[in-house]
Length: 182
Image 1 (cartoon, rainbow, N blue to C red):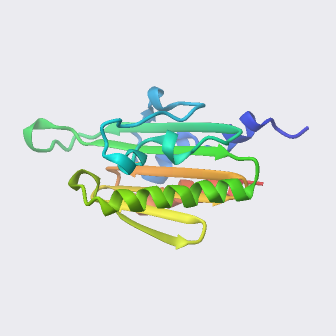
Image 2: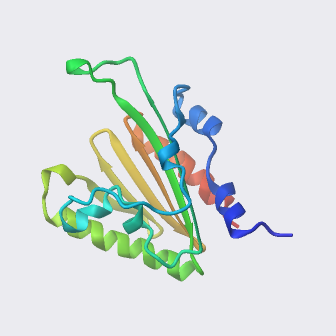
């Protein structure tokens, strides 16, 4: 018997132990706030289209059949000026749409919104965006990377904050999720 959509979404997510190995950071723990079955609304004070940066509600627009997200986070002993401990986090999300066209359309819509955000030139939302291939959208900035990919009926997202090299680390769980898609 094939897994339900919920079970399938859960199986796509890369587990904590694997992510610890990928990041070489044993201090990661499950971040309970980000353990979700529905997208959340991000920074509501973000200017217009920049709300899509950090808002899974805008990343994964309505129309999905199932959604799953987790994040793992931890701090290090490397204190920054004023005694601030850097936050390290890796997040993953998958949304299963009705078909490949819907997942691809959601990725294209996200790219359009993020292009509009970049056009505002808001210092709080500076990032570089590119497509490494037609199915993968990449955002990078100082100390963080976020990758989005559509494959089959799945739109996936992996974000890395503070764990270097962020882009290289983000690609590993993204590829693991991609390989798990039937």
